[in-house]
Amino acid sequence: QSVSTRLKKDMIRGLGKHTHHRAPVKMLPTFVRATPDGTEKGDFLALDLGGTNFRVLHVRILEDEQRVVKMDSQICAIPQEIMLGHGEKLFDHIAACLAEFLDSHELKGQTLPLGFTFSFPCEQLDIDKSVLIRWTKGFNCSGVEGEDVVRLLREAIHRRGDYDIGSVAMVNDTVGTMMSCGYRDQSCEIGMIIGTGTNACYMEEMRNVKRVEGEDGRMCINTEWGGFGDDGSLRDIQTDFDLVVDKTSLNPGIHTYEKMISGMYLGEIARLVLVKLTEDKLLFDGQVSDALQTPGRFETRFISEIEDTGLENTQRILTELDLNWSLGDVRLVWLVCDTISTRSAQLCAAALATIANRIRNNRGLDHLKTTVGVDGTVFKKHPNFSQQLQATVRLLAPRCDITFLVSEDGSGKGAAMVTAVAQRLAMQMGGDV
Ligand code: BGC
Image 1 (cartoon, rainbow, N blue to C red):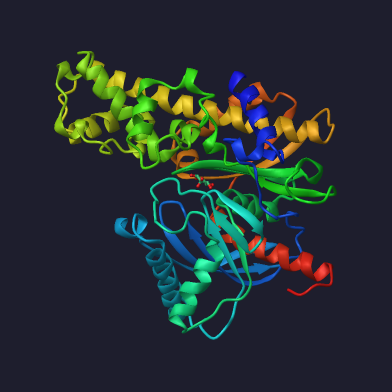
Image 2: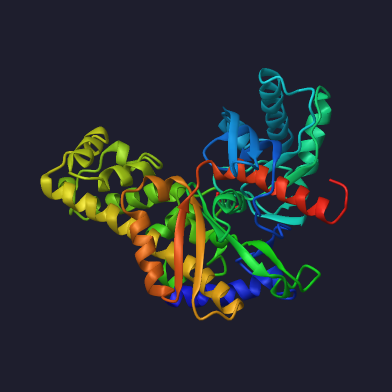
């Protein structure tokens, strides 16, 4: 409840014209003003950068069947040296992957509209103008922060000169997830990701979006809740382990909340706790193996595997980490993992409940019925994460009835959907597409 109360205040700071620049929760306008109404249609390209992989997709929206179909897709690996190298190299790589995809699917001659899911905090100036505020997760390319990502993409495509793209819509993965679920369920007004990183977006009343002109209607706000706590407001609940994870990360001091919740960090928190318990002679007879001493060796997926039924997975993983375990050790390791994943689920729930309560208050409703589109490996793969999260949301937002819709390929399909909705709105207003 206390975390939720703090976030509620920070969301208001993020939306305010004069408080935004100092606010840790950025509350970024997305220029997505409407969710799908079911009349969208057509063929689109989608790029998806920011999770585990980079993907190129060809997506078709079938109005008659009310379905978004992934026609084809291709995964391109992004090598570590590109993730940490110069931005121009990153965009050249993206343009090359797209070229290869268009070639192999005979799409090079067509100039299709493109949805670009770029899952990092961006100050969006319009649907096709989006300036990167800062890298998060494992990325740290130079020369991109402070630049318009659409321009960097177009320049890389022009440098090649062998194909072109149509209009571009920039989308955060949370927005893509909300929009792709929104085609199936038109009351889907929140998008949430709990994967490598964590974040959520929701439909806010325009009258509260002080940094964008206009009072009528709604706009989707990308909360960037991962940055919650960057001003020290969560210091009382951060543990020594959280502080080490932050200090040894690529971006110390940034995305405090994300580092307590998301897949990029949970395994490392667990590793640090296990090392400490071993040093205190509470585990493995006080013997730490080299593997357990190695940062990053205890992967987040181990937490899901350990908490899955039975103790066999735990025994296998501990053996793989060269640890000499007893049955008591196995139980204690399970408890450590359960504590870390439960904390993550409950923190996420506190944030989601804050958003749901805000939407209910915004609309002056006694009771809100709404749907959240969700994606991300932690939510999908962990055996009881989603139950924990839902139970805590029910406690913290008792007057909100929330349906969770797990998104299939939301960031790719959703990017196409955002492009399609933008086209529909432009047509309805009689403008150019
Ligand atoms: C990014 C968000 C993104 C989230 C989930 C965070 O690190 O800042 O933009 O939505 O990860 O991918």
